[in-house]
Amino acid sequence: MVNNVNKQFVDNLFDVKGKVALITGATGALGRAVSFGYGYAGMKVFVTGRSEEKCKALCDELEAHGIECGYSVGNPAVEEDVIKVVNDAVAKFGEINVLLTAAGYNNPQPIVEQSLEEWKKIMDSDVQATWLFCKYVGQQMIKQGKGGKVILVSSARSKMGMANYTGYCTAKAGIDLMAQSLACEWTAKYKINVNTINPTVFRSDLTEWMFDPESNVYQNFLKRIPAGRLGEPEDFVGPCIFLASSASDFMTGANVAVEGGYWAN
Image (cartoon, rainbow, N blue to C red):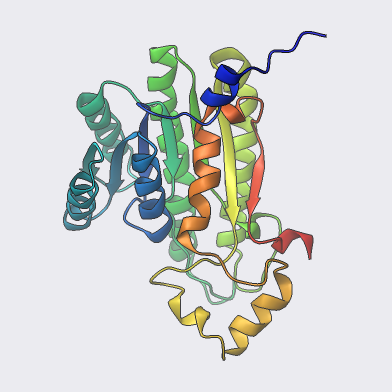
């Protein structure tokens, strides 16, 4: 049996230095944490979001820590905006090697009370935005001819229904199947790996209220999480570096649970 595992092979497994990552939803808690994680790992980071002020502030902060950064602003669900962001990233760094889609939206409501417009807003922000970035970054990666890594932020709720979540659960299930479909479409032919990460609740501006240890919401969540705590943004840095590296070359179409064991219980 041939042994292809040598020191150079192992040394290179998690080496992402010099790769260019485009991160959507970068000013959110998860996107921000991974932006710093990728940067400290030696990657060039191109961030995007809807707010010029927030994107510029994040990029300035990354650069202050010695991280090469660029940014572009746009609505991730608008095709013209996505094309501009992708073109801006290529103009800045010459290529895109990794795509992380961390933009999304939710507004839990009973289906009988939720308007079609609000449901479509969830679909646009989660599914359409993800599809558009996959389309145009995928075109760029195929043109480059060097393969690539695509990481779509989904949710543990993609496989578990919940009252008042007919928009969000449906959208995230769609993202899981989008990753699996693109894996079939791209990986063998173009060496582009496509996977999801599937978090449960993690700390952000929107969820901070859930982290009160005295609250019933917090206590009920802990009953379902074998890890014994809710998530923190930094919990996603390691999995995202792994999925951006050659260590994950034989993984594609996977829904990677980063949820403290939530699916296990």
